[in-house]
Image (cartoon, rainbow, N blue to C red; front, side, top):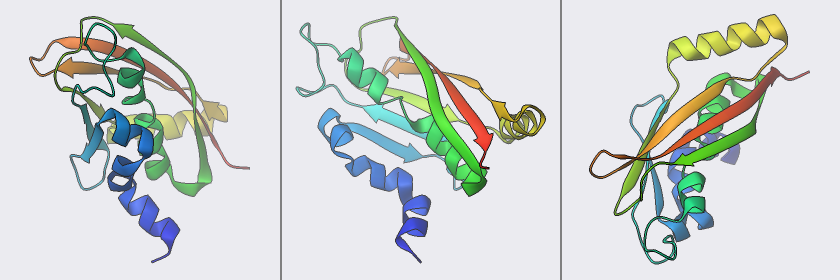
Length: 152
C-alpha cells in the first residue's frame, strides 16, 4: 500500500494529529466503515477558550471546517475537484464543556451531487451542521457551500 492509499484510508485517524486540532483539542471519529458519518468533538480547555471562559469562536468554526469537503473527496474519488467556497457561523449559545457536531453525507445526497455535476458541469451544494453542547443545546450553526466539478 502506497502512502497516498494509506493516507486516504486513514485520513480521519491521521487528522487527529494535525497540530491546530491537537492544540484546540479537536477529535474526529468515523461512525461507520464507509466514513460518511463523522462525529467531531472538542473539550473546553485553556488553549481554546475566550476571554469570558467559553469556547473561542474560531475554534468552534475550525472544528467544523473541512469535514464535508473531506467526506466528498473520499466518496467522489480522483475524478472530481472539491473545494470549500464559502462558510458562515451563527453563535447561538455559550459553548461550555465538551461540544460536538455530526457530519453526514447520505447516499441520496451523493447521487444528487453527481447528477447535478453531470447536468451543470459544476455544482455548489450547501450543507449545515449544528454544534451541540453536552446538554444538547445548540451552541452554533455552521453553513458551508462547496464547489464541485469533474477534473478536465
